[in-house]
Length: 255
Image 1 (cartoon, helix red, strand yellow):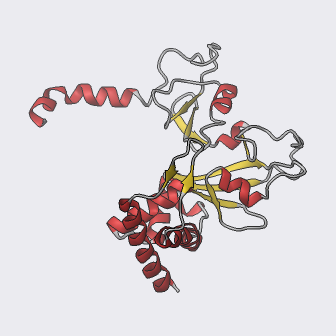
Image 2 (spheres, one colour):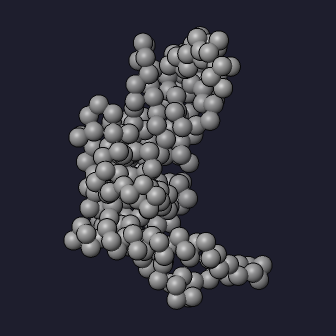
Image 3 (cartoon, helix red, strand yellow):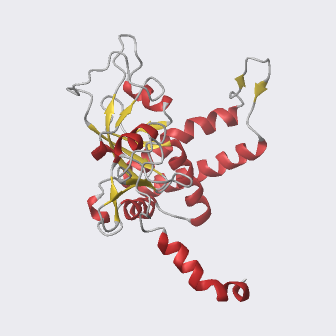
């Protein structure tokens, strides 16, 4: 590998560094508007430049992506919230029909902890008369709330799973894991990212221990409309049992 790479190292470096620039075409790759391509997503596959409107619209289904804005000389991080993005709950990501667009009581900031960083969004809850409670709206969106009545922070399901595997395989503590997420969110000023590692321990314990106990008791199964029944595999049962032991060790050690 190294023998093949050495003659091409300059070409490799040039190709990598060229990604830091905007290129010669500054039009939006979605709507084709000229001189409007100022935003680029670091997580979308082969993402080109987007205008502000297209960037916000596209990320309605990808709210936890990292966005960069062209300043005229370089790309810098920018939050989707600053572009006017609103994270909607209760209707599959679409605005609630009863949603008040004046944001008088729905547009408050909400923090979401994902596997690659901490994101702050302005949110709009479902305000239908018989709509689900806020904690249930979050669970339906695969977000685990840090509190019940008035949640302001949530952890994605995949983040809790990633933390469990990271701790199981690498022995990472909750404090170290959150320090890593703060650094991923803000490389130069991680101290400005306010997320408590205690919350991570609590939510991980709440999310996984009841599920583990149901699996061990044999009371977990899911019936599908086609007459088939899903049951957890032996591998999943073993994994969840290992996680249970790990959580109890961490929890009692923390307490």
